[in-house]
Length: 160
Image 1: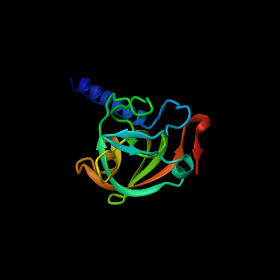
Image 2: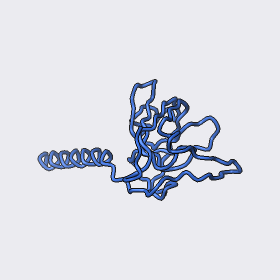
Image 3: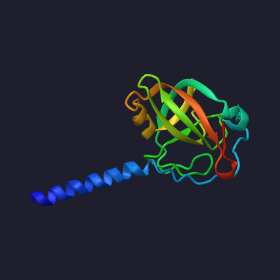
Image 4: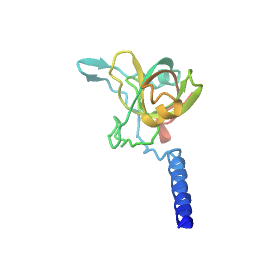
């Protein structure tokens, strides 16, 4: 009986390790072009920045987290629990950003594939997994630095 539970524990650990490794293997769908058309939410008009401006984008502000398990993001990508995704109001989609929490000193790479947050004073919404990795999941909000690493996918991908 002890041997059975030992084998069960080993199997559970291997499954957990496999899940942890899977979230780092980003199998993002390739989005053709850039989504940068103006849009309106709750009467407020947003105009996304150009690809060139985005490549030089760095900002510091308040981040919150959200769980979009199964939700389809603004570029048609389905977002799942455990993935490293984010939402921003004006960055062209898709783009890859480095998000750093100065309080904890931790950073994370995320794909911006959704729009938001639409709460005044918020800079970016991140997935629950990113909030956990950066150390502010329990707090709910924290100050972060956001730096764009690349914009676009495949042949459209541009880096600084």
